[in-house]
Image (cartoon, rainbow, N blue to C red; front, top):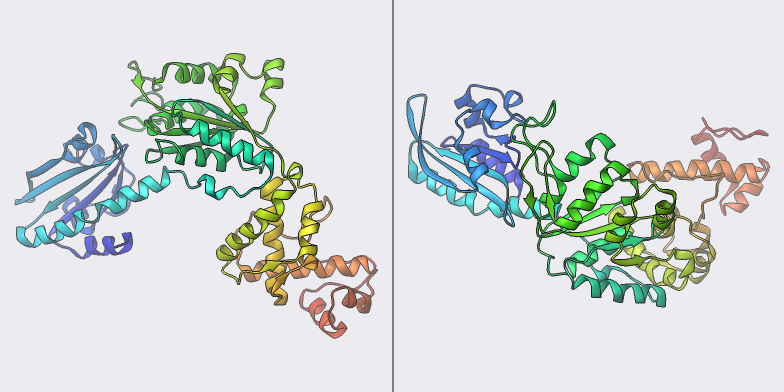
Amino acid sequence: MNWEMLELLFEQNRYMAVIFLDQDGIIKYLNETYLEILNLSRDQVVGKHVLEITPHSRAYITLQTGKAKVGYEWIVNGHHTLGTALPIFEGDQVIGVFGYTMFLDLWDGKNILDEILSNLNLYKDEVHRLHSAAYKFEDIHCESKAMTDIIILARQVANHPLTTVLISGESGTGKELFAHAIHNASRRYNRPFVRVNCAAIPENLLESELFGYEEGAYTGAKKGGKLGKFELADKGTIFLDEIAEVPLNMQSKLLFVLQEQVVERLGGVNPTKINVRVIAATNRDLEKMVRTGSFRQDLYYRLNVVHINIPPLRDRVEDIRLITPHIISNLSERLNIKERKIDDQALQMLCKYTWPGNVRELENVLERSLIIAEMDGSRILSARHINIPDDKFDLINLSEEKSLKSMLDEYEKKLLAKTLEKCQFDVPLAARQLNMDPSSLYRKLRKYRIMIKRECSIH
């Protein structure tokens, strides 16, 4: 049973009022029966702290204590009801509460309750998915000695669950993939894997995001406070991506957490003991940053217990032949198109390119190529489908979410304009270059309103 079906069950059931709270006590869902009890609209309730709506909430007590409240009496509008509040755990951490109140015929309520309880694991599974590692070492395809040696080292360090790991390498080399794999190969594999992009968090919010805060710590702080990423990762792994972007004033606090394995929430007085494995990653030269004073030397030593440096793709060309078919397979499934093989000439083109963007750039080039092959109906991905990017022309912006048809149209329009310009606006010559009939090319030019003149313009 998926969430949509479960929500339908809640909304159709008139015997039971249902509520879900998150780990901060924020109301994430109520069914219509509960809203009728409160005599409030959904917009007035969802997203609010539960104590703002029901000051004596038993569900909030369960959130604080982690103990279920089963079968308590609750009088609502003169009706005697039977309420229950159940904590939802992720490991030892309470991450939410499911509460319900049964009306009238308790036997009918029990039947519905049994069905609801049988599906509570759905929510636990979803939370586990959000805080879990997605990749394993088996997902790293390589045959170069450099990468093989790195995988051996990474597998070894995975067996030491408290050892800190520093992963370095250029952008797009697969640092996060290694972090996932190390976690999944360790004894912590069934515990949280929490990813933090240090570069994406504003400096003024970084401390509260990493270490959490207590209620009233600052203006706008949530009631009940908030767990930080380190507490969420307790007994698991925290992956600090872009670690070089952590400002100096935060580096000393981070060092303390790594050394002592305790965190102190913003506005708090009592430190909380944690058990977290730290994996950090960067594409910058931390040793140079230490020399220039922009990164603490003691923090660098604490992070650099085991150093894994992933070589760029240009230094392991033999891996391109191995990983390309796997990338094509994954992309074909994601794009929902037929999987294609790639011929030797196309592979040679890929192997000769220097790949400044590494594997991520290779994925983008192959995605473009598959779209072109889909457009012309080719069964094989060949050299004419491969368009190695240059600084002057970017055919498709793959960072934008677009439909396959719009991407095909965008690519065709730009390709025609570029080819026409290269052929000095000689349509028959451009048609030969594109291996198409001149009359078909004229139709395409009209379709995309590409003007045939000295300077090709696209409207």
